[in-house]
Length: 143
Length: 143
DNA sequence: AAATAAAAAGATATAAAACTCTTTATATAT
DNA sequence: ATATATAAAGAGTTTTATATCTTTTTATTT
Image (cartoon, each protein chain N blue to C red):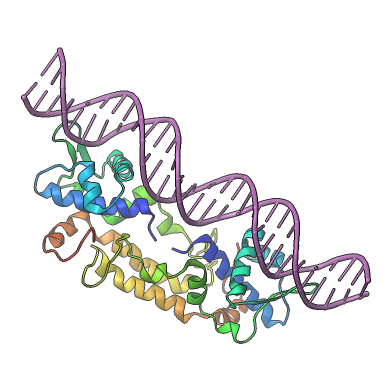
């Protein structure tokens, strides 16, 4: 479904969002621990997301990653697109180079709705949305 | 979504099913061409599917792969499970080791229905189902 | 100014997936 | 029986994804 890169990226973003709300910045080590991800790998991912302005960072003591109000509006789709590209939007389930209504693969019709819901899911959920939900202890980033 | 192995496997099975209907057997070369897949790779995949009895083969001249009436009842899920294992059933979208109703990841709820539909899709479609549809020229295995 | 804590950057390593090639075994036709 | 077409098997290669390590740069604190 998503690449590891993307899985780690989404979890990291949710994690950072929550810490940011409390005004603090989070270092890579805390992110890695808090999301059960390999430290250096998640560092690269955050670097990339920083470059693409989906998250901010400051260097030096008391530095780390953080998000402002605007960043909280980032959707899961934005993260997915930044890390995995557009394949989830464009790729055929059976790998046909072109697969569309006019020249569909055998499962094109059956997959259409699933794909639509998948895209809807990642587009309608913003990082900020998770903030409120996470507090309630209703879900987890590690286990 | 699916691995390349699985994509090729599904297309190959649909292809063989159609040829079998006409009573003939199909060689690896034809399968590879008919599904736009690398010959040796798809050979390995068919080997594996043969070992798992999802398809039959005979060696020698006029040999090749074929399916009997029973084989046509194979669902896409059977193929997926044979080639990709159960990950589609068990894996968490965000990669949590355990992710369930009691200890869900942040998108567990939103993904529940999508997953259900995905599984429904692969379980309800059998290889035989495609046979009739394919004849009408309504869909394609290559393009 | 110096020390330090942190991210940024880049180089490297490892593992898994995808793909290819070669050889062997087998069944069938002639 | 022999030749041949084919699948089976296995070894090997390439590519891509994942992960790690090392160095550099920067900002902050003291």
